[in-house]
Length: 394
Image (cartoon, rainbow, N blue to C red; front, top):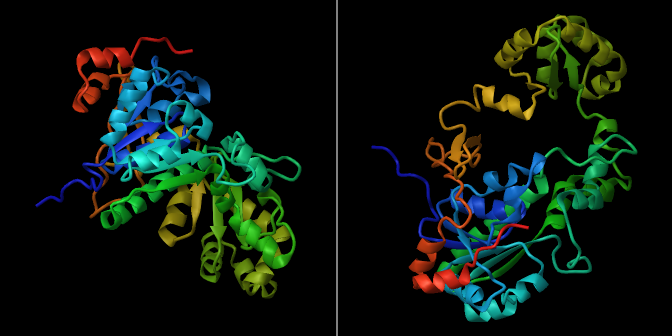
């Protein structure tokens, strides 16, 4: 007998007022767990839909499996329709400034009074405090917290190569919503949650903050760090590909030296113990580089995998589609974009009872679900037309 799909949030209605990544990611995580997520967009659609270049994947990726409703919240009819949706909802996800929400008739204190069971997840730049009204971006908070300092070489702060804070911030938004839903089963009351992009990034650099607090010195950027392992480096192979190889335990040191024919290093009295091996990196790493450089990436992959040595090819994101583990059954979801083809993307990174998660779903066209969703909360066709006047995107 097969297990049913893992959709623990089936029956939970989420209204999402958000754009870009952090808020949409929060809604996406809830949708992937089975919630009905209704994305409320302005007439003409969320501007994120129309980004190009590195911004092009943002809307389709983080809005899989959601319904799209267009409302003109600048009008009384649009605001009234939005409140009809909120009255039917369990969760509101938003990522606007508090003042912008108030302009839409969504003052947080008033919402808490009007909808006592509603859980509000605000995806903000900062938590309450001196910076709470600042404008934040992923790159801004990476520069502010020291993450960019730790990522780039000395004197060249560098953001990490993905929207890590936006995505992880959305995850904390969904995580806190799950906790509030669980609590509401006992209390019957909702919560107002605020998630900070800046504070999320603080958590990412917390290990370096604690190192400073314990030792009294700022750690150097990762490219210039003091190594804690005998082998932890990128090497060139005979086939022209780069490969990352590490040996972080005594057992791995003994194994890798044997696999590469470097028994002289394994038996060298100067290299007995991790501390001595780390201190000798200046002259041992070139020896490892020569041995690895004499073999192909294919040979090394088979050798290291068979003997438990941590390693990895240096891949580009596009290489993932040809990776046998990524391309396995259930490794990727295929989603359709309304009239604009399909794309493949990962789902949630866990299995339940050995099974992959249900498909993430497709990306709705602008306002594709407006009539059906608004009719479900009692609006007549003429009322629906009044709150969704046509407007082209800016």
